[in-house]
Image (cartoon, rainbow, N blue to C red; front, side, top):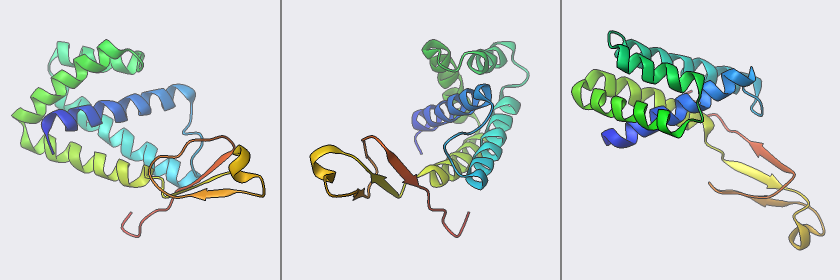
Length: 148
C-alpha cells in the first residue's frame, strides 16, 4: 500500500478510536464486533505510540490528536510524521497495514435496509446492498467473515 494512503488510514482509524473513547463506547455496532474493533484500534494505537516513542515532537503530535481528534491540523501533522516513519521502517508499515486491513474488514457494511424513504417505500421497506447508502430509519447489518 502507498505510504501516504497507509498514513492517512492510520490517522483516520486513530481519530475514530479517540472519538469513540471520548464518548465512552463504540455505539451503534454489535457488542462482539464493537469489542473486536476496540481491541484492534487499541493495538493500532499501541503500535503507533511505540514507533513514535523517543521523540518529543512525534509523541506530542500523537498526544495532540488524542486530546483533539477533530483538529485537522493535528491530523495532518501526525499523518506527515507517520508517512515518514512508514518509509523509514518496513516492519512498522507492515504492522500498520495488517491492523488497518482487519479494521476495514470488520467495519465493511454488507447490507442496509431503508424504511420510510418517501415515495419509493410507500408500500414497505426498500432493501439496498452496496457500499454507499443514505436515508433515514436505516438498519445496518454487519457480516463477519469466517477468517475473523
